[in-house]
Amino acid sequence: MKKLLLILLCVPLIAFSQDCKNKEIKINYTNGLEIFNVCEYNLNINYDEEKEYFWYTSFSKINKTKGGSGGQLLNGNYKFYDEQGNMRMQKSYNLGLMDGDHIWWDSLGNITSRTSYQDGLSVYTKFQNDEGYWIEWENRSFPGNLFGSEGAIKRSYDKYNTLKSKQTFYNMSCYHLITYYSNSQKEMEATMHAFPGTDGNCYGKITWWYRNGNIKIKGTYYSEEECNFYNPLYLTEMKDGVWEWYLEDGELDYSCTYKPEILFWPNGNKKSLGTLIYSASTDTWLQHGKWEYFDDGGIIDFTKQFSWGDEVKEDE
Image 1 (cartoon, rainbow, N blue to C red):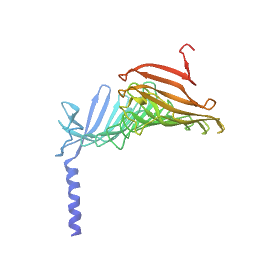
Image 2 (image 1 turned 90 degrees about the horizontal axis):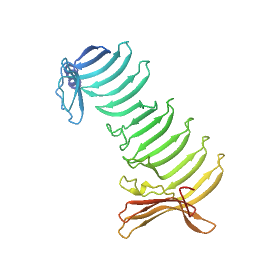
Image 3 (image 1 turned 30 degrees about the vertical axis):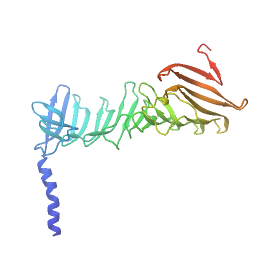
């Protein structure tokens, strides 16, 4: 009985390998050579309408179709060599779907980009931007959702491939941010709210460090329970609670206490918002920093800048 079971378990593997016998294809171009493999006989598979399948015919060469195939499915390794014989591109396919690492090189043999796929969906990519800096995106929790989606991680590197920042996204508009010094020591850590068209404002706790690892500044910005894409209050940074400034040797230099103030029109729309700072000498709360003022329709009307209760004019 055990012997029969072993034979039955092996049958699907043998059938699969026979149905997907690979055939190597070589195509010469004026600028190089393309070598790849196709399934000589395509399997009877259920195509996913949301995924792109890569296939080949002698007429169309390599092509792709969403949710279907017009020829022999690419399967296994793909390589492209330039006219000097340098490998410039390497890919991997599984039954027409991109799978595994896809790597690109320049003419000197340096990697210029790498993207990893899982069953046709991207889970990782790293590339150089126009300024020569490296950008890396990763989302293995939700394949196919690399850029700014829930669970996505973005790392930015300088031209020498030294990590400069890491962003971990909670949703499309909120992310946890860490920036680094060139010695890999943390420089700043905070949660950011990035409204479209802005660089993002701090939300919740924030900490800065000196290069030696000692804390430089720590405090908290006003936040509600969730970082909400639709909540316009987060467009303004308002300090909240005790903030502390330290000397480079770790000794506390001074501290200040803040609280946000948000006023509303009778119709419920925002009227004004900004930060108050506590003055121990007068035992009062004073306007401090940027304040925004809105009309009764909730549209921002004007802004003012304050320093310890005194308005700061633009020409000052």
